[in-house]
Amino acid sequence: MTQAPPTSTARRTAGRLSDGREILWYDAAPGRVAGVDGRGLPQVHTVSEIRYDELLDEWVAIASHRQTRTFQPSGGADQCPLCPTIPGRVTEVPTPDYETVVFENRFPSFSGGVGRCEVVCFTSDHYGRFGALPPDRVRLVIDTLADRTAALSELPGVEQVFPFENRGAEIGVTLAHPHGQIYGYPFVTPRTRQQLESARRYRVRTRGDLYADLLDRERTDGARVVAETAHWTAFVPNAARWPIEVHLYPHRDVRDLPELTGPERTDLAEMWLDVLARLELFHDRPLPYIAAWHQAPVRQDRHLARLHLELFSILRTPTKIKYLAGSESAMGVFINDTTPEDVAARLRELG
Image (cartoon, rainbow, N blue to C red; front, top):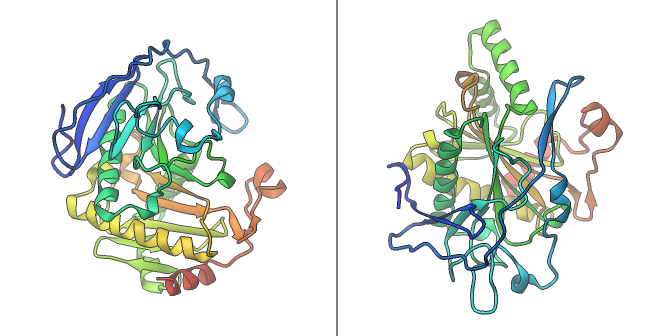
């Protein structure tokens, strides 16, 4: 068993699934024994590749094998591959219980030694949700994501590590069990490249840090601030694209999750849960959302980047979804039917 970094509360235990994929258990207490996967699965064979779009200067992943991946099994927990293995139910996790577990995706978007895709199960409770976890368990998840970011950053060919959670059928989630994913991209993503270029131009023009100055302006103005703690501020961005969108920024200049100190991680757990609780109350119904961690690339322009969490929902009313139609999908120009100031005020009230 290899221990995670000193700032982490997690104990990491490594194992292998029967088809050779890596699996890792993360626990708050020592004593975990890696389970043995007795399924005798055949070796994973995938056909994904990345292709270059010359017009947009972007890479596209082609992964046709994902068409056959598991999609919303009708049997609930009895057929869920992310639940623990118990008598009569054999799953991807060969132990009868777990706190947080990570394993290589059997249906990865990237394969063949180019990039890496992992699944992160936040809890063994099939009917739970991330926002209902206690703060110490969210801290364990944060430590897990930090440890995986550090590990994937050391893999040859990985240029950016992206932890995220898709939640809700409206988002397109294929499994209801509370889980997220981590992508180790073999390139720097278009959104990150755009942010870095904006930060570069801003530094040349003002000699300042775009992320730091943006955060300072939001904290000074206050109209879009949702909540603040000792180490973090949550705010609705001035030019929010989505009906509900909140960004969480650390007060200190931090590049990625591994750089967070212990107190910053503990504080983040409280803030993350606070914001999710407000979001759940916004439409008085379970909210479909995406939680996306923006981190500095592994090698390129790290000095220009700043860690932050982007939380957003496609739900514009309790019963209506914001679809990405002509302007958004074809031209990349978003049209938002809400104002960031009104959304922020409502989220402050819901605290």
